[in-house]
Amino acid sequence: MTILVADNIASVGLEALEEAGHHVVDDASLNGDALVEALGREQPNILIVRSTKVTPEALDASPALSLIVRAGAGYDTIDVEGASARGIYVANCPGKNSVAVAELTIGLIVSIDRRIPDNVADARDGKWNKKTYAKAEGLKGQTIGVVGLGNIGEEVVRRAQAFDLDVVAWSRSLTPERAEDMGIGYCESAVDVARSASIVTLHVASTPETKHLADRSFFEALPKGSIFINTTRAAVVDEDALKWALEERGLRAGLDVFHGEPAVKQGSFESELAGHPNVYITHHIGASTQQAQDATALEAARVANTFSVTGDVPNCVNLASQSPATHQITVRHLDEVGVLARVLDEMSKADWNIQEMENEIFSGAKAAVATMRFNGDATDDVAERIEQQEKVLAVSVIEL
Ligand SMILES: NC(=O)c1ccc[n+]([C@@H]2O[C@H](COP(=O)([O-])OP(=O)(O)OC[C@H]3O[C@@H](n4cnc5c(N)ncnc54)[C@H](O)[C@@H]3O)[C@@H](O)[C@H]2O)c1
Ligand SMILES: O=C(O)CC[C@@H](O)C(=O)O
Image 1 (cartoon, helix red, strand yellow):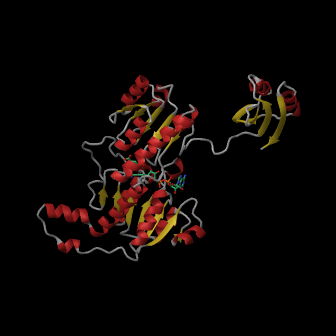
Image 2 (spheres, protein in one colour; image 1 turned 90 degrees about the vertical axis):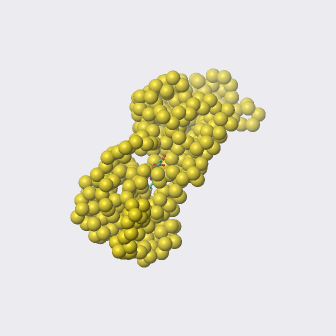
Image 3 (cartoon, protein in one colour; image 1 turned 60 degrees about the vertical axis):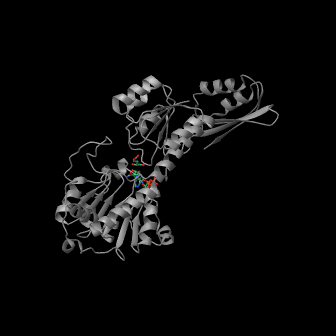
């Protein structure tokens, strides 16, 4: 297969793709129009990206494109709805960079508490300022609130507990029982977390539902002088409300993601937040440890290689969780040319729309059984007509 890699992925991943015999086109500079042009020129079957945006124009550029692999966790940079409408699989690499993000989260919290970056900056400037910097609160016994207990949230909980922090959390699937098993407090909402903690860290995916989850009411609920960490995506935070909290509530923030974050890997940028004395900005480097990069690249290669050999897509994020099929027909038949075509023809005449189908062959390859889930008006006479066909052995229809 032809695989276009439009971002920097670790060399172990590229090697795994090449060893599997693929034609790999590796160009980390591709973006926007250049990506569309490269897709049109190379006609890849698989596209592997990190933060590079995959737009509707990119989806239309290569008719051969069957799979997009996000070498990372969040896939909000890919037009997933557009991919689904075009029958293109989208997969990600869950859990491969979660330890790296959790480590950065804890690093930011300690940095803010002890003002490590300011200490260092002053020391580099030849300024000695123990008077100012000897005023940290200390973390032990404070309460940290985790919003979103996916792969990263769970890693953060483990590390926070090792720091003797009390942990409370809200996550859409968290139950009081699971919270108890994890040794953490259960909260009913993100605002409830904010109310209960003096350190809060966000780890929900960015979706239309989580947009501005950290809004004015969230920041109003946080105690004055709290620590706020965002390593997920800028869209989860209402930045005006964040700025209000920085000014009015003495909030201290560690942000690996923020609005207007540069899309390029290097260059200058302007940001009101970056210059704020209460804010430490990092360069969207949550996932950027060699360990995480290697694990993610190997997983991206595994997804691509599995698809090329079996047609299966590990970690697929855009298959319907439930098909809209209303009925299932099972057809036991002789395994001969044309039998299934005639069955499908009869189903088509009855306006039965097939959503899922499978045909399993019995040993000896004399007979097979086809199972199809469809949407339609399942009257008995259609099933009878199929059963009367030559070389069909038995037919049954059930309502789902
Ligand atoms: N800063 C970085 O470099 C970096 C690296 C990796 C991931 N991330 C971000 O962190 C996010 C979380 O990563 P993860 O590996 O823990 O992902 P995950 O899929 O394991 O967890 C996602 C969490 O989001 C929650 N969630 C999803 N949709 C939701 C909705 N509609 N409402 C409420 N909650 C919802 C899930 O319940 C889960 O708790 C990613 O989506 C990505 O945006 C950033
Ligand atoms: O690729 C990166 O550096 C960032 C990845 C990260 O945001 C993710 O969602 O996995």
